[in-house]
Amino acid sequence: MMLGLIEHFLNRLAMTALNLPIARYRFQLRALTLIHFPAYAGSMWRGAFGSALKRAVCVTQQAKCEGCLLKQNCVYNTVFETPAGQEPLLRKNTEAPHPYIIHPLATSGASYAAGELFTVQLTVLGKALIHLPYFIHCFQQMGEHGLGAHQGRFEVLALLQEQDLGAEDWQLIYPLATQALQALTVRTACVAEPPARLRLAFTTPFRARQQGRLMTQDDFDLVTFLMGLVRRLSLLSAYHAQALRDVDFVALRAQAQQVELVAAELQGFAWKRRSNRQQRWIAMDGLVGSLELSGAGLASLWPWLWWGQWVHAGKATVMGQGHYVLEAVA
Image 1: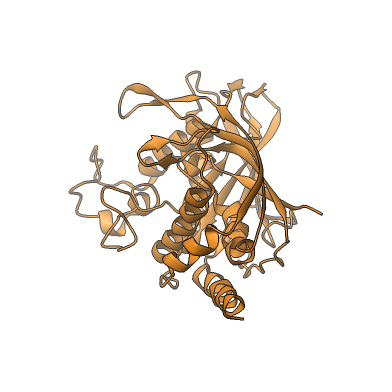
Image 2 (image 1 turned 90 degrees about the vertical axis):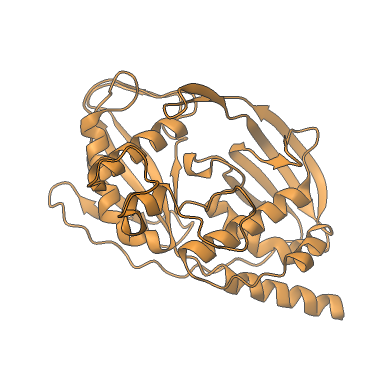
């Protein structure tokens, strides 16, 4: 009886704590010159997006945001250099989560000749939704400036928005012909009923550390994964939605320990990105594959898992890493 009451309380708390507006957008693009994308295009898109946004909004032209008089009210600082502030959930030397995610899979490893069409998706979270016009302008500027070493150029043909989270019911909100933005109201998503058993499949590399070491397929820890997801969602809600922060991490950890890892089919995924800031290549190795979960604690962690599929898990989520899909197992 008591266990049932605890699960009910935790489920209700999760539903309240995760009152985080999430909108998914799809840019329809046309190549103007030949464009080559690397095997994993997340870093290229993220770098171009950040550069375009800084060019668009920075009025001081300082090399670094630190010490800038305007940074507290700056769109770039809010989105790309999210101030940590005094949030108690943050550990020492950690950054606040950023309110956007670029989905690079559709373009990863692809090449487009002039005239060919392609798409890229952008997820925007919480209060950052008000900056959508800036983001559209950034993609237009990215197309004019060019992507990658060969400066492959493109044009924005249209922007679509998903009406209901995960429904794939995309609606045109910004056509090139009129350039009139008619963004949809972001509806409150309804969490599906928890399955007794589920399969979680990573579609992009999941990267995380455990006790200071990069997690591998040989030492993957389910509780670390689940609690990292709870923490990420709690921080996103706190920073970008001003939602309930009062999450009982101790009780949730106890429930996470009751989730059974029935099967794990994981493998390493190695790739590197070039850091212009550090002038070096950085390893971004992660894990892909699937997990099968069951057990008494699954119902309590289900809302967090369900929301997590939209905000990703682990590190480098802004580049699209840590995306997974859920499927009920009979």
